[in-house]
Length: 116
Ligand code: AMP
Image 1 (cartoon, rainbow, N blue to C red):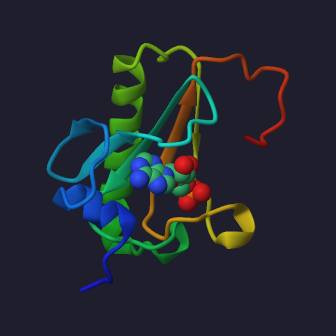
Image 2 (image 1 turned 135 degrees about the horizontal axis):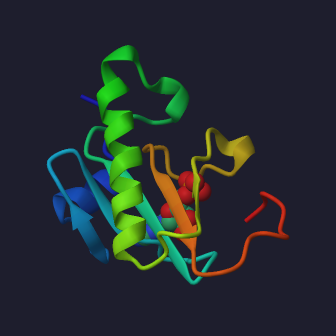
């Protein structure tokens, strides 16, 4: 069993969060420190520390996260323009070692760099 993480505690209801979507494989919450007008996090219930730690058996789960992210972005009203970002490792800015997909939208990214 993987160690508890901030996000696994949110999934268990031990830490409050603004949960905007959930299904049997993942939840989505509002980011506590939004970097865009819409900033959501899609988090698998399974604790995978980083995307590089995912294995072949996680293939369907990873696909599920992408499909859920699209649906969640649509429901959040940003279906036409949003970014999905996964930070892998501290050097890439990862601070919570429980895989999550950032959904960022509600602003014009067309002239900005990938930095957020
Ligand atoms: P990363 O830097 O890719 O690991 O992303 C972690 C994200 O989690 C950051 O954008 C944080 O603002 C966000 N975050 C940290 N604590 C919480 C929390 N309690 N509820 C919601 N989002 C959080």
